[in-house]
Length: 215
Image 1 (cartoon, rainbow, N blue to C red):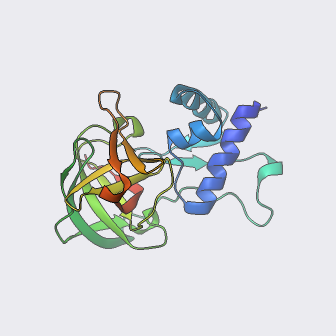
Image 2 (cartoon, rainbow, N blue to C red):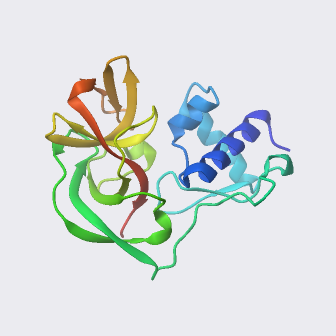
C-alpha cells in the first residue's frame, strides 16, 4: 500500500514522463505536492524505490524510471512509458556550444563542434550540448564537467532548468522563476544566491533535456 503522498508523487512523475520523457525536478515535485522542502521529496522517492515502483537511473540527473503504477492509474491503451536507455551504438551528433556556467554567468554560447549523444536521450525538437562549468546546480545532480543536453526553446515555465542568456552576452544554467516583470534564476546550491534580472535582459536559449557524465 502507498500513502496518499506517495501515490500522488508516483502519478505526477508518471504523467511528466509520458508527456515529455523527462523526470520532473525536485522543485517541481515539491510544488506539485505542496511540500515545504525537497527533503520530503527525497523521502517519498526513497519509499517508492524501496517498494519497487520506481528506480533511479545511474549517472544521470533527474532520471527516474517507472517500474509499475497502481492499476487504476495506468493508461488504458499502453503501459507507462519509462525513461529509455539507448544502445551504445545508436547515436546522434548534435552541436557542442562550449561551456555554460552553473555558477556565475560566463561568456555566451559559442563553438560549433559536434557531440555524439545516445539517440534515446533526445526527445522531439532541435538540441545542442553544453559542458557545465561550476557547482551551483549540484543539488539537482548537475556537476562541473557534465554535458548538458539542451532542447532549443525560447520560453520557459516556472521550475524548469534553462539556459538563460543575459544582456545577449552571458549565458547561465539555472532554474527559471518569474516574479512579475522580474526573472529569477535559482541555483541548486545553498552557497549561492538567486540572480534577479529585469525581464527585458533575459532570453531563454533552451531547456535541460538530459545529462551525460564521463568518468
